[in-house]
Image (cartoon, rainbow, N blue to C red):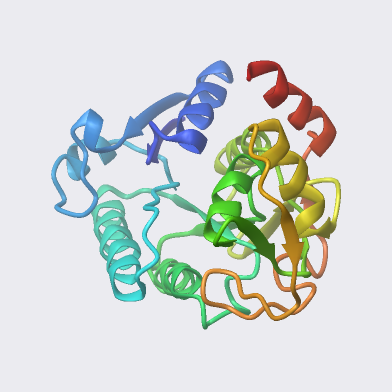
Length: 251
C-alpha cells in the first residue's frame, strides 16, 4: 500500500513512516524538507500520485486564532483537492480530544474547522483524536507560566506517548475508512499537575507548580473532563512512569 504522510518528518510523522515501512508498506514522508508544501501546493500532486492513503499530521505551533485557522484550512484544502484528483481512497487526519467542545481556543477551533473540511470532502476518511502527548508537557508548562511559577488548571488530562499515537495512526491508515472518529488516550487520568510537575522535575525545572480552577488552557476555560475521552477510546500502551523514566535517563 502506498501511504503518503503529510508532516512525515516531524515527531509523529517520522515514527509513523518508520512503522509503516516495517509493515512492508510504501510510506512517503511529505513535508517542505522533502519538497512538498501543502500551503503553496508545491510537490503535492507529485507526492500523491498513485497513493492509496494520505495521513495528515501537519502542525504548526501557532496560537494566534486567525493564523492557525488559515494554516489548517489552507493545508487541508490543498491535500483534499489533490487526493480527489489522484483517486486517493482514504484520508486520515490527526486531531485532538476536546476539539468539538472548546470553541474559545483558537487552536482547537482551527482543528474543528479542519475536521469539517475532511467530513465534507467526499474522500473516505478517518479522524483520530489524541489527548495531549507526554512530549508536550513541558510546552504546556511554558504556556501556563505566571512570573516565576506555573499555574495549571485543575481539569484532568489523560496524556499519551507520541509513539503510541504513531502506532494507532498506522493501524487506522491500513484499515478501511472509519467515516468517523477514534479517540486515543494514555492509560492514566489525573489533574494537570500530576503529570506536569514530575515532567518539569525530570527536565531540571524547579519552578513551583500551583493549581487554580479559574486558569484557562490556551484561551479556553476547562470543565474537568473537557480534554479526556467521554466514551470509548483506544488506550496507549505506554504508561507515564515508564515514559518519565526513559526521559530521566536521557538527561
